[in-house]
Image (cartoon, rainbow, N blue to C red; front, side, top):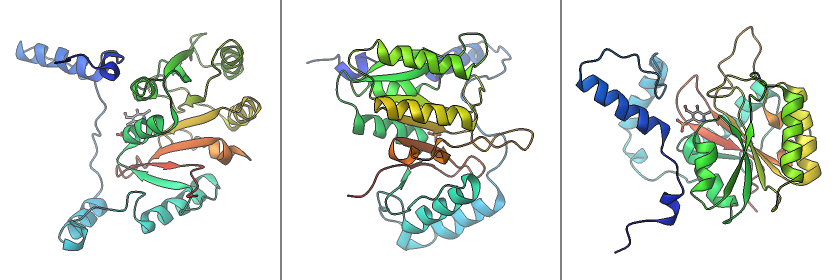
Length: 258
Ligand SMILES: Cc1ncc(COP(=O)(O)O)c(C=O)c1O
């Protein structure tokens, strides 16, 4: 019986599981450690959220499968939020999908758009699913160093992307970005987004933007969404987690229901 599987074999070790093993071993030896592993929230989810969950859990009509794209009321609420927060108008019927989390959203998106051998440009370092989601589908990753000069330099990054596109066969199908970044905390501004959209339009490449930390910022300076740029909706997907409420990740995208 075959015990090695093509997709599993392509995956490198998962950093969080490696860290968990290290932690377990140290704890077993009674070593006092500070956990820099997976970041779990250290604040509660908010009374109004917990109360709503309790109120909803006792309604038997919710003890069923949900709508696969997310219930219409939730998608409408997300559209309103996106309009308020980013000034971007999204059609809840055709441009918003609810997923079980950002990781699932990105992994499913990767399997939806990647054929074996397709090339994806992914920052390095970055959050694991940005590369692994595509590797497991049979895609090939070209890493774009995101801290080449020790800090993020938008101009330099765009030049590196441009070299990667010009010198790659096959041409990349997508670029992954994630600002504010985990793990580097890099930010980007609207100007960078504008240049990136121009670049992606020129080479017909999708932009897949993980906005997991859009609501964590300083100095009253909220991070932008790539979808704020004119024309971005036609070539970009934004994956958004409502971190403030810890409820869900979701996709707002060009996915039209046709
Ligand atoms: C950049 C980034 N994207 C996605 C996720 C995962 O999101 P979710 O828990 O919704 O799958 C994380 C979690 O740490 C993250 O740092």
